Image (tube, rainbow, N blue to C red; front, side):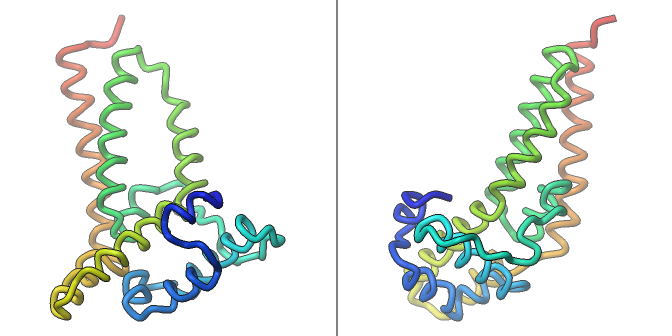
Length: 183
């Protein structure tokens, strides 16, 4: 993320970011590995905006997010991003089949791109979710929102696998019926 990206999200100083990340509801939104993400995002802000040398953060590059991004997105309850990824898989599979099965290596570049921006995607998700929490006046609604969209979910991670596979099989089947591969 760049300096303007932080400003668009309403983060103008390191103090703004620290105040946001130290809120109890934001801690609950992040859930597991809160300390890691807090340190990571503070380090990124200090490096990008303040020009300080990048502080080493153990685990900065999540290899799991590189190889299994839809599973990671499901685990972190990034449902809107997961939906976009599934739609992208659908579109890419259709395009790949239509062009003649020659775009397969492109998916590696997509995985690399998602891996490079996964921290920013998750950060933006937390910022937007915290803004929704700010607008809630009912404590019960706030807790329900955090339970539904905050923390992590092993079940969502597990379900993202068959959903992605099923979509790919459905696409392959439909494409095979209507656009058989050239012989």
